[in-house]
Amino acid sequence: MGKIIIKTDKEIDILREGGERLAKIVKILKDEIVDGYRTEKLDDRVEELAKEFDARPSFYGYRGYPAKVCLSLNNEVVHCPPGDRVIKDGDLVSLDFGLKYKGLYTDHAISFGVGKISGEAKKLIEVTKECLYKGIDQIRSGNHIGDIGQAIQRHAESFGFSLVRDLTGHGVGRQVHEPPQIFNFGRAGIGAVMKEGMVIAIEPMVNVGTWKIKQGKNGWSITTEDGELSAHFEHTIAVVENGYEILTEV
Image (cartoon, rainbow, N blue to C red):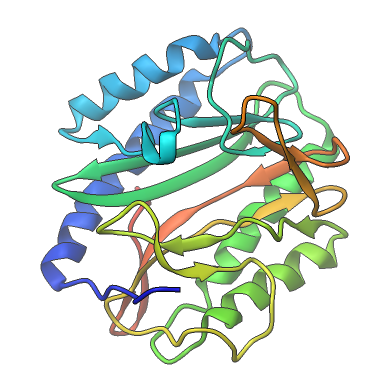
């Protein structure tokens, strides 16, 4: 699994600055993505905004990823390059973006509807966001990573939704991905013990139907196996003296 990296106070200060920048960029992008938006221009826009905030996108080239941002639509879960698709009224959009600022990394994802979306899509987005905060509420020194997964799983499944099991959250900060893995399901009291100075990215991926997923022909895009809707939220969070601090909020 590898060693969990405890961040210094100075590093957390930098991650706080970077996380605020990341959250502002994601908010700007969300407001710009409307019916008729051509996704082929998204990478250039991300690059432009990152430069405005004295940072750079962290996904491009990571393990060979060909884009600067992940943009998933409807039954797409994660890791989807923007491509040449056009956003339409009624689409469920998931936007996942990472930023490198002063040598350190933060990660953030949101899901939202464009125009008039179905009641099912609205509920899925609402519950997935709630799952994220249910997991975050378990973060404090002395708790276990499994506490996060159990809280997320219980909430999603209470609405009849399922959690993607083959993809996880992760540590973050000095690298894009670090130990430990943060599963979105599980049992309380198991897994690594959280300690002050840990920085983790929690990212529930919730499906309307089966939790099973499949990889697209482009070698990157992950979709639901049954074609049902999926939503995704993510924050970068620091374990601090009195609990937690969300670093990717504005």
